[in-house]
Image (cartoon, rainbow, N blue to C red):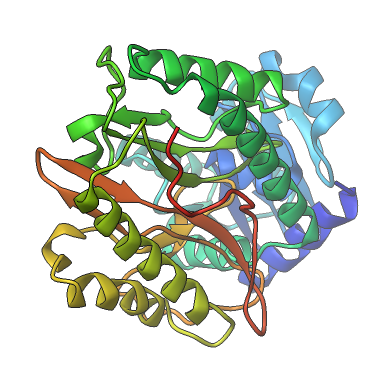
Length: 363
């Protein structure tokens, strides 16, 4: 990605500063990566009206120098002492910190230490909201990274689908799939892969165990890969050897709900209306009580981020948002079905990242 992208992001974030005496301190790893291109587990990103600074310790200094863009890199030895020096040099009087990502202990420490140099440390919900609103709209480079993550996911899924047969365990499928994803270019998996079978498919977030695949059961894949920090997220439910009439009926209802939600996705539509489009199909079929989660969520540098596609959320979709569409029906102790696509919202509809077929596949 061009360094200009990161410079544009930091320039935009400066709008939160009302004068040269204010600064923003970013400590969330994902937000730091969004602003400069370098993700690391310890340190901070400091933005003033004129400059941007990335503070890392010795373990990350060489990597930061090669990866970070649009900022001055400082190798700190004592974080509070070294950041205090930068704040003093820039004549900063107030520094805003992310309220959602700082612990109470760290906030007290920052506030106490920075007060000694005349700097007021302020937890800022406004800073959190500003960054969230920046990240919620994906640019072309972000779109391409999510697309790459999805392509890796699909290639790996199609390869491992051949292994879904009686006698194979859920854990074997999960391990094989993670191996294939990394072999195919993923830096990581988006989350602990959900590869579950039989009655466990009624668990929306079931955990793979040594349970074996059996003929006549559903098998659910809820999977995703990470590419250059960006996630993909897809769910497909397949049947092993055969499917009962009830299984086919439930599958068809979920598919109809999923497609109906897709038809409603476009700029200007609320998240609630997309959720309603899926939920109404399932409720009208008599299975409303068995669909208890949101229809979707945002995806990007985090696997779950804004906006939440829920009946509670009246956020209006805008071009550039990336959301999932994943209704499901879960019949306790019997089976469950979920079908999930991930889409990029456009003015007149959406671009679907997912190319996998959605009709019921019997393997």
